[in-house]
Image (cartoon, rainbow, N blue to C red; front, side, top):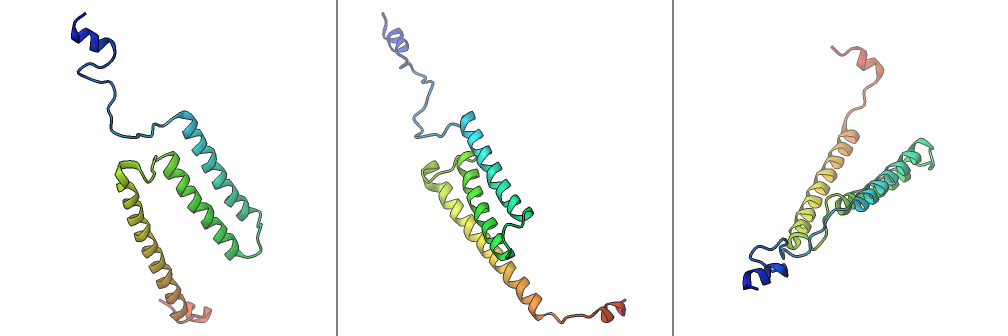
Length: 133
């Protein structure tokens, strides 16, 4: 048996069918279904909380919905985007942290501006609205 056929018989030929690129997360039907079921549950519970008026305070309901939204973001990142701290040598995590910082700054700034616009605007009466052009 020649050296070429000997190495090819054992799967160690010149061209390998696989590469050693490190740990790659392969998507499976079970993984996608797990993510889908979790996403549906994490959507249905806040919907039920709002429609069923489960809490008397809208602030409590809002905070719980925000918590469910944060958990759902993590579920989507893990099950659909296949992101973790080890993927692509941590660059995905760095990009995620940068994105989170930008979103927090944007949301906090928007809420701050809207709050101050609401408190500092002059209230208008119905009579004033009728006289507007």
